[in-house]
Structures are given as C-alpha cells and as structure tokens.
Image (cartoon, rainbow, N blue to C red; front, side, top):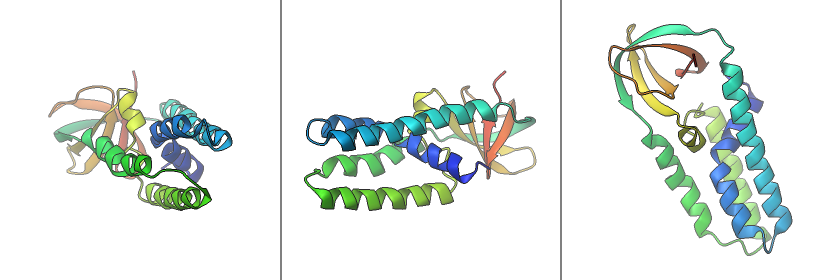
Length: 170
C-alpha cells in the first residue's frame, strides 16, 4: 500500500482538473492563490506519474479473471460530486477561502484513509480503465489497466493498495 505522502500526492492529482479551473477563475483577482492552487495540482499530477512508473518495478503476479464489471464511471461520479459544487461557490473573500480549505482537507483525509487512490479522473484521462474483477480464488479486486478485460482472461498485475491491482505494462 502506498505511504501517506504518496496517497496525498494521488489525492492532489485527482483534483488537478479542479486546480486548473480555479487557476482560470482566480488568476485575474487572486494571482498568488491561483498560482498556489495550480502548483499543488501539478505536484500531485507529477506524483501520480512517478508513482505509476515506480509501481511497474514491483513484482507482478499472474491472475485469472473469472468475472468483471467496468467501473470507469466512478471517476465521473467523483467529478460531479466534488468539482461542480466548488465551481458554484464564488470566491469573494477570506471566509470562502477558509471554508473551501476546510472542505478540501476533510476530503483529503477521507480519500487517503479510505484507500480511494483508484478513483481518480486523471487515470481516466491517462487512458486507464477501472474494473471490479473476481479472481479464480473468489476474491474481488479493483483492477486498473490500459486494456479492455474479458472474462476468463489472464493479466499480470501488481498489488498497489488494499484490494487494488495495477496491470503490469509489458
């Protein structure tokens, strides 16, 4: 399982689209805040790229998929649930900034402690797909892959979190 710093970077990367939106909305009147938000999002995005590359060095195991369901829509739910309300709140003072910061910190704690690293719109933008797969041994896992999966298929995967697998690139 990724360490705390890695999970925080993955959380930040999941909000990169929001950081870009805030950057555009705040740049004219609040340049320092706009740049800070964009820097945080970019650091998270770079952290995600480094993490995905480093995870490929972990030893993989071959797994056989007996059943599967696509879960790509979970990232869309994530965007709708969290990003849209942020955009609707006008930034007109310190109070709104503090309120949004508190909300963002609470979301970060929930994301990190709930092992939600696979719910990340940046993975979808990077052409990754999410599947809930049942393995031969009956366990149910989340599989992150760049390929389409089929029942009965086999894949070489790396454990990157509790019940989360990442397909090993060949």
